[in-house]
Length: 348
Image 1 (cartoon, rainbow, N blue to C red):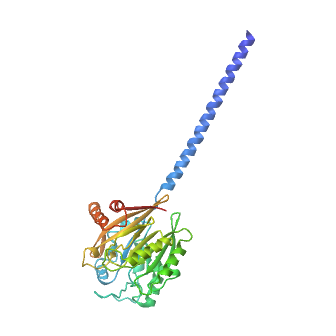
Image 2: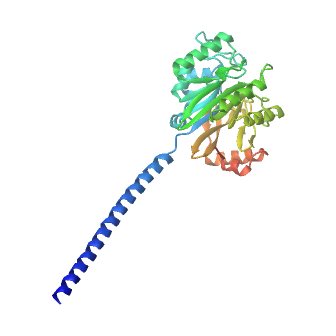
């Protein structure tokens, strides 16, 4: 009897020990699993924090009557209503519609030979304009020397630049880094008779060869026309076939229609951004783009604005929706629901 009691006590003790051991292992497993999950959540949160958007804007012309307004109201006058949005962005990409020179004379009203003050480069940098394209029909308004000085002054100010009015070459690709996504921005001027489409397509292929997200900034099209012409459409599609991920156009001074080709957006013209063309509603409106990336998706938000005495001002929600509805109605080569929603979304 006494021996049976000892055996029973031994068995109970062993059972208790097993229960305690299992309980400790479970607690340890839960602790490790919880720690691992918390760590994973922290990593996911870090990965999901969005990078500030890249803003794309159209033509910036800081001469003629714009220069007069800046002299009267201060150098920052043209950017006053968009400065906070620009400051919050990763950076701004725009078309600089004329040369920056030290031997500057204000462009007369009505003249098409532009000249901007030497302080312009620092002004652009102060408003977070990170890159400008110089590939347009006004880049050589002050001659080859003026074009060269423009690059020099932009370099000093820390503003990247791409492209040339007359030539296609190494200067036509700018490489940057947007978070973990490499960017290649290519700039062309297709308004000159000497424009070499084959050379441009070849350069786009070279820009995209390393997998960079490749953006073509191009000066082209017919002034004051809201529909892209056949040449624009064929060239844009050739750029995308060569590896471009997005096309951003300017020169017509009005917003043109847009297209989705092989899953890639083509914005044929963003219109004016800062200009002194007060003679029509279309020349006093424009479209900017705010590009962000989420995982393998690119989101481009459409941001229309009005230009009030050469000063762009973003539309309020009601105005924006009305503008987007009208824009969707004139667009036949893009899903209209995307346009009305004001977001173009595509895989990358």
